[in-house]
Length: 191
Image 1 (tube, rainbow, N blue to C red):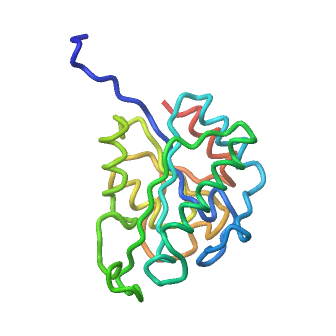
Image 2: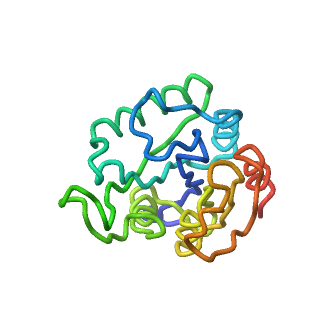
């Protein structure tokens, strides 16, 4: 291999609310954060399989004025810390603060970083040198699955949180799993 060639890695992109932690509509306070049973162990297993673990989440609580970027960053720091205490590592967190009907004008927009847009996936792939064809998107909403499909990721719908019953997008996942632990079994056996 030439010295300039870069080896690409594989990743599992995880939705946050309803996939890793309990679905709370507009989670805006760290006191509301509850990691789902088995989620930390599942992420630890993903780490052991050699995948990067990247959280990809829409955070319109910022655009709606219900929280701030600083508070969301604090929630993410606490989430990472709790997972780390259980041996689970999050390699990166990407979030979109925008919403087309945001209360705060600077966040009111249609953007390509809000799932099902794929700008954050593309940014992560470029920054972290991810091979998207060897990677997965795991989430509980149809927007997660559509984003994964658009980015050419293998998609897994978990039956926690919304369990795909948000009925926003007409999309079929590649796999359906009871929860994140069951998704890891799919990931570990996928070619």
